Structure formats: C-alpha cells, structure tokens
Amino acid sequence: MNIELKAGFYELSFAYRPSIVNYIKDIPGKRYDGQRKIWTVPASERVHLERIAYKIRQFEPVTWGGSATEEDKTFAIPKLPTLQCDHGLKINPYPYQLQGIARGLELKRFMNCDEPGLGKTIQSIATINIAEAFPCLVICPSSLKINWEREWSKFTNKKAMVLTDKVRDTWPFFWQTGMYQVFIVNYESLKKYFVQRIKKSEGWRLSDVEFRNTIELFKSVIIDESHRCKSASTQQAKFCKGICSGKEYVIELTGTPVVNRPKDLIPQLAILNRLDDFGGYKHFVSRYCAGQSEASNLKELNFMLWDKSMFRREKSLVLTDLPDKIRQVNTCEITNRKEYQDAERDLITYLQRYKDADDEKIQRALRGEVLFKINALRNITARGKVRDVVEFVKDFRENGQKIILFCSLHEVVDQLKHHFPTAVSVTGRDSQDEKQRAVDSFQNNPKTDIIICSIKAAGVGLTLTASSNVAFVEFPWTYADCCQCEDRAHRIGQKSSVTCYYFLGRQTIDSKVYDIIQTKKKIANSVTGNSDDIEENIVDMVANLFNEDQNNSN
Image 1 (tube, rainbow, N blue to C red):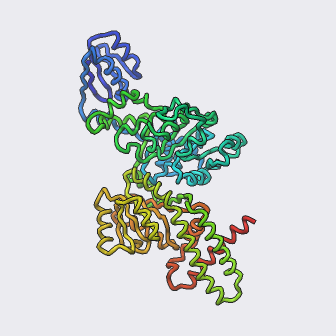
Image 2: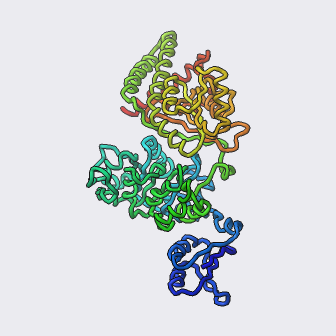
Image 3: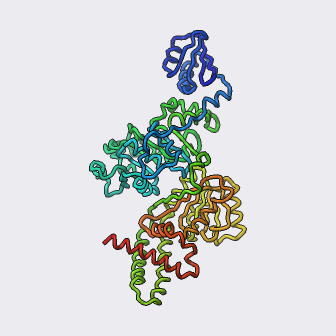
C-alpha cells in the first residue's frame, strides 16, 4: 500500500484485498475514485489510517509519502470558536477567554493549558456554569482551595463549599437542599472523602478501590494543576480517574501538561477518557514516545491534542486582549493560627485603649505601640503563609516560568531559600556585587528561575524583565510602593502582560491591609517615615476595620 499526502487528503493505492477495503470503509470521509482506482481519506483521519496500516503491514508493505509543506498544512492548528451564548458571569471575560469557554463547551472533557495568568479558572467556571453541570467537584492543591471558593462567588451566583471533617459524611445534604452547588477538595484528601475502602494494602490498582456512592452525584469535575497526575502509579491519579469515570464534563487545568516527556500525558488523557482518540495506550506509546528521548511525531501529537482534547494560549499571543498588569489575590491558610490569634487579641486590646484615650499625648504614645503590634501581626502572618507559597511556586516552576518573589522578613527569605536552594536574592544582607550577580543571573540564565527580593532593597532601581510574574509573600503599606515593586518587571523591555499575585492569609490582617492599599491609594509614603499624619491615618484605618469586625460579630 502506498499512502500519499496531497492537498489535505491521503491518497491510498494498493492491490485489491477485500479485508483492506473493509477496513477503509470504516474511516469517516473516505471516498473511492473509480477512474484513478484510489481511495482518498481526509488528512484529519491520520490516526485512523495509522491503525489500519498497523494491522495490514504484516502482509502488505506500507509506504508513506507527502511533502513537508503538505504536512504543515495538515497539522495547522485551527482557530478556536466564538461563544454563541451569554457567558452568564458577573464580569466580562476577555475575548480569548470567551473562545476558551466556547471550545470547552464543544469538547466537554478537555485540558485547558493556557499559560499562567491567562484565567484558566474563570474559563472553567463559566463552562460548567453555562452547561449547568452541577454539582461540580473541584480538585486542587491545598493552597488554592480558598481561592477557588472565592472565585465561584466572584464570578457566579453559585455557592462553593470547601470540604472539611465537619461535613465529611453530610456534604451531599447541602447539595440536595440547594444550599451549595460546588464542592472543593485537595488532592491529599480524596481518599478521606470519596474512598470506602481499598481491597489491597500494597500494590493496589484502581480496580481494587471501592469508592463511596456519593461520587455518582457529581455531574462535572475540575482538576486544577492536573500535571500532578502525570504518573499513573500515584494515589491521586488513580483516585481522580475513578471519580471522573462516566462524567460528562471533566476539565483539567495545567500550564504544563508535559513536564518531562509525552508519556506524562497518558494518565491525564486517561482521566479524561480520551486515550482511545489517540489509538489507545499502545498506539500512543509507539507513535509519540519512541526514540532515545521518548518523544516522536510531536507536530502530529500537538495537532491531535488540539483537535481532540486540548487548547493552549500564551500571553504573547493574546496581548491585545490583556491589560498591562493583572492583579490576582491568592488567599491561603496560615500554619501558625494559635500564635496569630494570641497576637491579634493583644492588638485589639491596645486598639481599644488607643480609641478610648482622651489625652492626646497618651494617644500619640499608644499609636506607636499599636503600630508596632500591627507590624508584629503582619510578620506572624507572613511566616504562616510560607508553606502555601512554596506549594504555589513549585507548581509554577513546573510550568517553566520565571517568578519574582517579594517579602520583607529575613526569616521568610531564609525559609524560601531553604526550599529553593538555586534561587538568587536581592536583600539588605547581600552586597552590591552579590545583588548585581543575582540580577544578571535571573535576567540571562534560563536555569535561574526564582529571585527572592526584599521590598526595601529591590523595590526600586532594578530591571527584572526576564519574568512577567511577580508574587508578594509580604507587601508594602502603600499602593505606590506596591507599584514600584511590580514595576521591576513592568518596564521597558517587558514583552508580556505582567501578572501580580498577592498572597493573603485567610482571616488575618492581610485582607485589611490590602483593602487599605486599594482604597487609600493617596498614602504615598512609607509608614517608617517621619509623617505623623500617615502613621495616624494607617493606625486609625486598621482600628476602624477591627472595630467593624467586632461590631459584626456582636
């Protein structure tokens, strides 16, 4: 058999065999040209054709032909569709996000592999919301659970619940009574909430897992950072596959579907029940995982992924849709809650004394003490956020993206360096030469993907345009200082929209300070300066916010 690629079709010529003809008749879009005595098959059905070639090559030699130009045309990525219905969200998505929503509704079980910062979350929420595929289960890293809860409320009128031990057995009641439509769980807790028992203690397979019947309730599943399931042997990959079985809508979100090699895709495609679209496991491995590097026919694989189960956009391709800066709040759980609560009670006591003071001198003296305790509370919060920040950066790092981390405390810097030994830093403890070497390495060395910056030492003067991602573990008191830090990446030489991630500790002073920054942008100087008016303004604003909390709780 000779297979020739011409003008978007494969032309098949071979000595007549009834068995081969029967195989070809199963291919969608096939046609027989009686005059030329050849069969034609659409180029998009190459995988189907390869299956036939594999079957017959033992008794019929198969040769493939066609120019590189024709192959490029065959594997050209089509444009994404336009959304034909109302997006149903509280805010208007960007045009490229609307296209992602439309494609998601077409595919139903797919991977959104957009570059970080392009809004995979809002696209997946809109897709599920338009499809009314509720209840929906969101599986995500622990550090993102609160963020997902907040995003559902921000974009829709649906209510989301983070699963906890309190609702381990009763969460279905909240769906059945119409109180909640979305349920959020981290990877590590899948077994606790959804597995009845595992029949073997060691070497168990998915067939050995007995799931709780409650997984049948879910109409859809969103799996955030799905590259965590790149190994089929892990618990989380097995549990995700079992939970997603039979679901109409399954959405995987990842900026890096392939971490090391194409084999990483197999468990993720299996969870989507999409492996058969690629000829099954054996065909996928032989076709796309061949050679010393275990990677082959990558152009074809990319086309097949786009055609069957995936889409991906990079910032550079959608810059016309994006603002110069995107700010995103990531709410995380702190690990030192008891220490924080003790310090917060102490601060509230001082705030009450400050507000009740009649004598101006006493009030001024108390103001300094209150400001000290406010900063102490912020320091406790910063230390408590490190665990979730590290988890976020690890996932981010796997996406092959550089990132700038801003913080203030030496202790926080040291913890981050402990977790990321290859990271460089610009802090008050580094000499001028060390700072410059760190900046040069970050700007010019592809392997230097993390730079840890002190807000004071690196907030001005530096150019860090090698990254378009800035994350604040801690952040300054003022909007102007935040902008100064953001502008290390957002300056001349930056070719992309800059995404700024602000990490806020849940139920901590962080949210109060962030509100002050956003609503009081005229406070342009640092609190450590000599302006009594600025100090008084900040202390009063924090006091008022705490008073509002006290009044709301009474």
